[in-house]
Length: 193
Picture: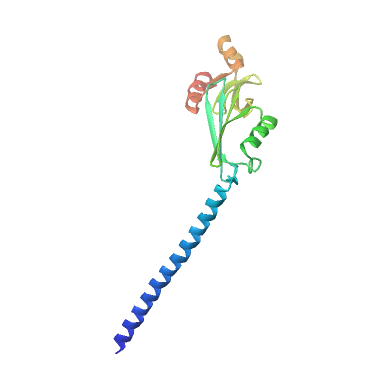
């Protein structure tokens, strides 16, 4: 007897579920048909429908890639980061105006709310170089800052340049540009060994 009661409850629940599904389907189908009919009537009565499209804007999750070509060394340095606060909510036109007014050395290459690519050129060395040169009459190592200026990294006062041949002195006064720490060690070894 207990089993029969269970079967009746399960059958009743299943029938109720199917009926509610069918009833909901027909109600929603009627609403969709009515909505489509109204849209078709509006289109046919000569009223223009305007489709609104949201403008493409920079968000806090937009990646900004700055590609900088350094003319003196020929390197192309690419830096990717999330959009700074100053860029957030800008449209393509807003960004072009901002760059023109504030960062004239950068141009907009591509724009979307996912990624923005900027291009620029600088007439100096990139920051990946070292310069072996002269400071206070002795051999010194310089790094390059973002503006192309030499920054003193290390000076070797125990190695004055006046004891070197004139050709080597001239090279050091002008500055010997190197691309890596390995190359720096090799060249430095020739002057301080």
